[in-house]
Image 1 (cartoon, rainbow, N blue to C red):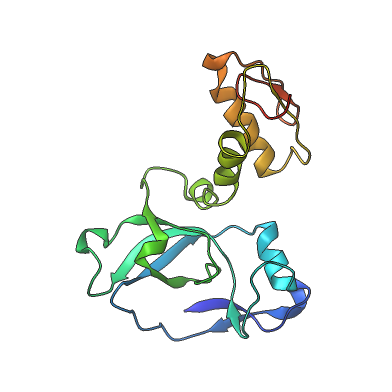
Image 2: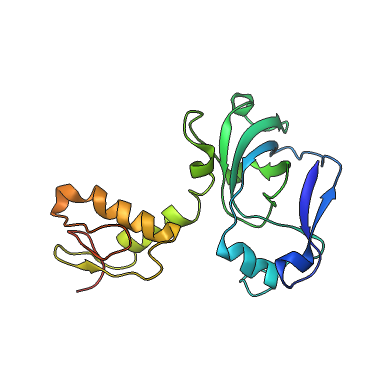
Amino acid sequence: MRQLHLIAHGEPSDVIELNTVSEPALGQEDVLISMEAAPMNPSDFLFVRGIYGVRAAFPSSVGAEGIGQVAKIGSKVDPALRGKRVLILPTYEQGTWADEVVVPVRNLVPVSDGADPLQLSMIGINPATAYLLLNRYVRLMPGDWIGQTAANAAMGRYHHCAGEACRSQDTECRPAGRSCRTGAGVGR
C-alpha cells in the first residue's frame, strides 16, 4: 500500500515522501480501512511544520481525518462493521493520507453509504468546531451577532449553514461570507 510519510519537520514539499509499505498487522480492536477521501487541513500543515500541539516521531504518517470502507477487522471488532463506510475521527494516531489505514475501532463512526465521501471526509474537524463555537463556547441569546473572518473557508460556510438552520429561531442571514444576525449567534 502507498502512504505519505513525514520524514522531518519543515515545508510539506520538502519533508513528505510517498512510500510503499507492507500492510500492517491488525490488533484485536483495529480495522483496516480502504480510504476513499482524506482532506488536507491547515492543522495538518502545522503538524508537518512542527508547530502543532502534537509533535511527530519520524518517520510519521500524515493526515488526521478521512472516510473509507472497512476492509478487514480485528478479532474483537463487531463483524457487522465489515464493509461499512466509516468516518475516521481526527487524531494523528493513524495517518489518513494513504491507500489503506489501520485504525483503532474507537476512532471510527459508521456513516451513510449514500452521502458524498468528499463532504463526509471533512466532517470531523470544521463542522464540529463550528457547532462547538456556536453552541458551547458562549451562552447564545436572541439578537446576538456572529462575526467571523476567513468566511470563504470551510469554517465560514459551516457557520453560515448553522445560521441558515436557525431560521425557525428568528434568523436573518446574509450571503455566505457575511455576518449573520441570528437567534443563536455569538457576541452582544
